[in-house]
Length: 292
Picture 1 (tube, rainbow, N blue to C red):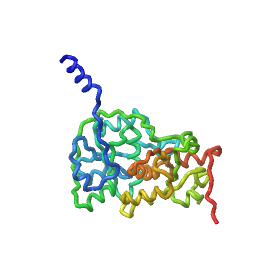
Picture 2: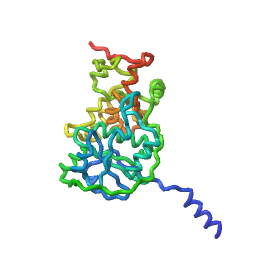
Picture 3: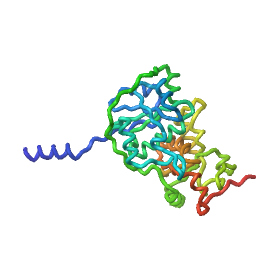
Picture 4: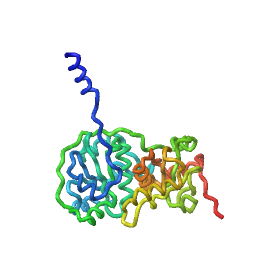
């Protein structure tokens, strides 16, 4: 009997609870249904100032300024912040170890909101972050209310970790030689082909494929249906079992492809330095698409 009791205690200590995976892209109807779930946190983000947030937001939302987690520095645009700073920011936003987060953007701020989605996954929240397709405008079009009331919450206990979603140029070079990885350029095809961009070199990383990020979204800044996104990926990629390393100009718009790929079940990485870094190093391979 004592052995049985000890065995039961050992199991209860050793078997940790597994948090269910949150859906990657959600609709306003889904969020309305799950808004009051235990641990639910809505983060309102984008190129908006706090006054925009104060004027109207989804009940319970918290304001996330992108620079807190992806600051510009002399070394480049939208750099990944250090883990100590990220932990402080997330705890001050009330993020806990069991939080389930929904990213909400305003208007055309889909790309920067996608960057915040990716950043949170990079910081150890993979599988626990969702993205509200269409943002607050879609929420209002669906007839759901907004408020100007201040949200009240306590300091959180989440500790940021490096989930290795963000990668560097050395990782990209290895991926180009790895049969299990594919490097993807998320920019418009004309820039992939070689139209001038203002960078020291034009074109794309040699061997990279092109999945333009605007193909993922519609005119209302909502993600297209999963079937359409799947077709956009499928017509370029040979297989779904590949790891995709996406890049763009500065590591922002590539996050739309990152988010879309995650919704399809791909293993995704983001090359943060993107062309801002790659084009400035003449030792790194680039090419232009030949035109007739």
